[in-house]
Structures are given as structure tokens and as C-alpha cells.
Length: 184
Image: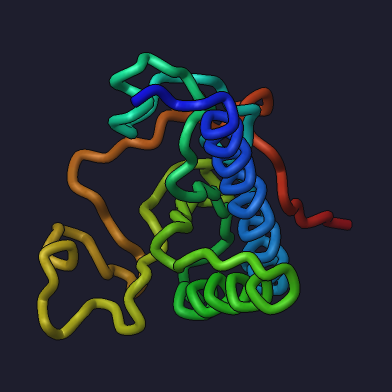
């Protein structure tokens, strides 16, 4: 079965809509997080931040026919520079609130696990972990992810074994500043 031009166009429009919706979700999360004093800067990066490129996707019908379509955005990546890690629970709640507000105001539904928050130390510009999605951190039922050395220390700071954030992903030509606290 050959895909029609209309089916290809529909899939491309769907993929572009997913990127737009993820971008809206990121903006709402950033707005909610920016209300916390410790948050200094928020940057959107990854596939949601830059123009999509066409590629042969994972979808069988497109692979079989060698049809390139827009890249599929699967999640949102934001980096958040903070002065302190004392209020990560409030940061997690702000993320949830931002997503709820985006759903109410823009009819954009994004699950909390689809927004990866990369925590950055504002003083050193160093990646220090990710924001945990669990309501309670560390989990008392000892989820596998919670057993990673350093995970949950402090609470709501997730560690991923062997992960290193590539600073090139945060470069100004491939990222978008969503918030920057003005001083003075």
C-alpha cells in the first residue's frame, strides 16, 4: 500500500503541531517556574527549540517506502539555572502547575514525564541533575531510578547513571531563552 500525498501531508502537519504544543507547554512551565526567586534562567533546547528537519521516521509505513517526514518531538528539554537547591519540591509543583495551566488556557496537554528539567547551578553553570517527577522523593517503594547513587540528595534532584549534558546543546544557535532574571 502506497501512502498518499494527503496522508504524508497530514502526518507532517501532526508532527509540526506536536512541536508547537510542546513549545507552548515549555513556555507555561517556564512562566510558572520563573515565580520562584532561586530560578535565574530557563532555556528550551533540543528538537522543540529548533526548526525540525526531515528524516525517515520510526513509523513502519514511512520506513517501508523511504518517505522522509518532519522529526518527531517526543519530549521537552528545558535547562533551569538556580541559585540554590533548597526548593526543588516547589519547582516540581511549578512544573505541574504550568502544564495544568497550558491545558486549561490553550488546550495543550503534556504529561509531566514529557518535560525533562535539567538543573543547572547558576554560580558554576554546571549541570547537577534533573528535576524528579515523583510526588515523593525519594520514593519509599525504592523505584529502580531512585537507587542511583546520589539520586534524591537533595530531595527531587534525580541522577541518571553515566549521563553527561553536552553543553553544545545549550548553545544560543540551537536553544531559546524562555526566562532570564534581571538583576539591579
